[in-house]
Length: 421
Length: 176
Image (cartoon, rainbow over all chains, first blue to last red):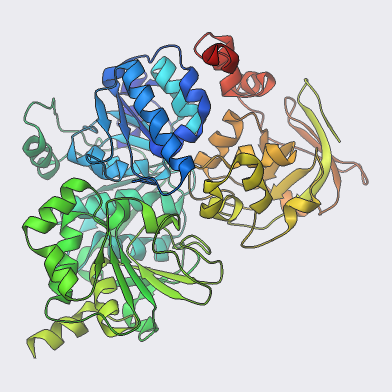
């Protein structure tokens, strides 16, 4: 029976030939990732035995280096847990980064695999053709003990990409355009494919797969095409890799055609991305207080490169803060080596330690009442980045960087044209 | 206002709207607090002060897309306040799994916010899939959970099941 990507991966993981939407399957999990905040759950320390320590990683990301004694205690527990159960893949402070970036950099999610982590943006690994989703702390505890969990096979919405992605369009713009037009995808899987996919780089696929959580999708999946396999081989040539794609003739809940040539820079208004994003021009010029580039969605090396390109030779507008958070130590180091960090700092940006940090309004870059932020992170919920009386707009790193220079929400074209003039 | 071992819940309803997200129920700043303290800040953005009005055994009712957002364990805050069950027209799947795994029954009634008015005393028979508004006697049915989830709820959640299966030591054993 022809299968969609998610049907294929979940049925394989359950030891079946095929599966149909609505079926509940017990699936073997190939990689389980535990993060620092999960160690708030003291019961982790009561685990008798980890099912398979080789299929577990621990990543310190949400609150590192520890901003509170409570967070420091989570670190103590994480180190004890790693030691007790012989978890070798332990990305402690110094090797840290946002979990989904660390998964990507280390080849922890491979095509066709099942990946589990408590964090809601675990769907990011769908960029590599992995069935990955956030499951919450109790369920991760179960998988650590048993190596398995259940998944309900969701119906699939397919986005058939045609045309070529314009160079200035980020995965964020493409995602916001889709969320604006089609709204939520609760209880569905999203699947991307079509002839235009080859023009969408891995970094943009990561952004899109990450943000799938924001329209309520259970999974967001890209096929493991040549671009994906080459990317993973470059990370680790020892990875066992094979192409994974949906079958021709698979049954979809909907097939939606997206002409990439028609996608332009988008901004989501505060509150939600669902049916709430518009082309940048419609919001120009909204004055801002803070601009943020970072998170599992847009803290990648290409995002910092793009931000540096936009701000080069300019200064952040008076009264505006530009905060840039590389998604991992590895991204940070490469951004230093390539000069992006000095370019950003010369423009007046603050380049911070690699952490989830400002995205979830926890331990830096928190917004005051009445402030306006434009962010390239994952969520624009009321209160997400600080005060419930602050407003959070969402856009691509290029739009955020340009807005920091202008002091108000603008298209990066304005700033770049200013450079060449 | 009671919850019984046979998964029958009777409680007073609090009604919320569509698209209630996790960051509203469990604000980022509250993640710095104990579960007990954090529970005092549920709905801080949209309904501040609500936790003070809750009585043990109450039920929370919401509309569509309930719980979009983070994996933070909102269910623990609800149970800390004594919320006995959730009813919604539609859930975010991560939020739903999180609730059931922490032993909080969360049932789907497609017209929940029309069927139930704030303040109604409602009885939910989780296993049978029936709901009743006590004042009017109005009844409706809802989709029953698969047996393995009913069993998990009967046990009080996934962690209790892991203990019973010998996967988790009791906290006392660990500290001993």
